[in-house]
Image 1: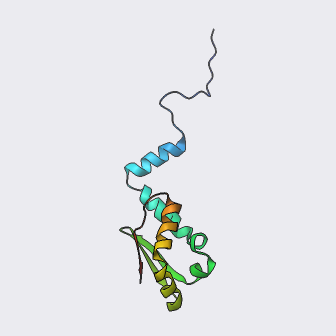
Image 2 (image 1 turned 180 degrees about the vertical axis):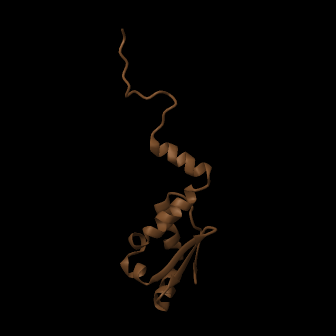
Image 3 (image 1 turned 45 degrees about the horizontal axis):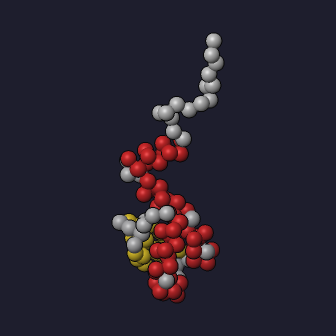
Length: 103
């Protein structure tokens, strides 16, 4: 009698990570998940000084919308929009945003 290994994968099995990524993409939730990851990583992406003065952060229609407690910080960030866009898109590994708005 031949023994077989129960731990071997069959051709219809896939890693859970791959299955979840396909499921999220199929339901259009992959972008939303990346948006949440960016919001949660804001202090890491921009530093604690910027994060401390950011009162609200949202992503809508590929626009990063920020509310800042400091007008000076807002003016400085406005001049660095391209750097913010680049950092966020590199973090997300896709074009998640293409503009930054200050509210």
